[in-house]
Image (cartoon, rainbow, N blue to C red):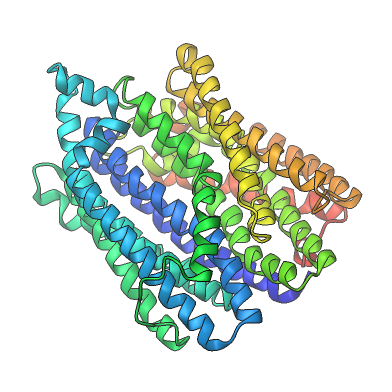
Length: 516
């Protein structure tokens, strides 16, 4: 695999690391401010809708549909035709999203009732959670315009990524985290409902991300007057690819929204506990899975356009090996260090040890599926780069249906943890179907060398896990330590795990720096 692709992966991972670290800091601030009470449930609910849309647009369906078509124009069309495509896409997509955003802001109570049915039912019947529905409706009016901003951020990021400018779009989410942290510190304490201050932070974060992209687009000569082009050849191709991709790449997020819907009927704190555990899951998923998927999609698209079948397979293999090398130890670490990480990051202010215990159970359940979540991110571009969105949609439908069945099976005996278990199992189904489809069609299959590589990685990660388990203190020991001591102890365990894993890889003949 070329040094350029490896370097791009490192750049995106580095920029994503900055964003994810600030994202964790943001969640630490939120946990300290709100804990896992009713206010936290409502804010997380109101933030999850635009966050879901961010995943679709910034890291999902739009990117998957636009990049292959834009790459085709860059490789085979004139500069004028490429500029026209940008103009038509910006005008058409922007017009549609403007209408959708306005309708959503006006109809926010309907959205709140749809995804927070438990709260709506209480509101209708004057139940104890009626105020949650009213507050959620108000906060959605503030957070939903984020969709408008992130749509254009996604367009800008896709253009820059296709032209090899990966760092800009990878760094952009940093501004959302900064805006939310600033809002929590400067705005929330001045309000009777501090969660509204956080919603304002979401709005401001979207605006800043949008403005940040403009100078880089100007440098690339990609700032072009938008114009409506529903029937433009390129727009037709993009929307044809995008509509099914909206479903295909959002299986995990749709599962989380469905979890939120069910959790609205459960005890207060359920949504918050799922959220905090999901946030820790998102750290390695974004740092490795989404970052590598972002890098390989333009390369896969070019290989497909230029009919380089072997190069296509090599790029897929690079992505899979990268994910195996980093995803397996990350999964083991999340499972074994669930409680210590939650204690160190969140256990202060309104977030207590009970919240740690509850969140850790769902984090363990989510953590068991981390490798599958990552594999979905890497395997899906194998379809989208070839402008095949129908197949992932079919698999996505199957996955969503299995998630609903698993929810019914596990939610009753295990409560909110059952929702995490169901999401993990549905991710396994989705990843398996994606790989099976690539295998059957002859597009990609694991080589013998990759399977041996996988076995070595599993053994190395198992040795790492045994060391971490052996040296991890009991819960009471963690509780008796001060915040700084807990943090130092956790850092020591992570360092021990990381070093032991690298040593084991080296002994097995795997040298990460030679993955390229």
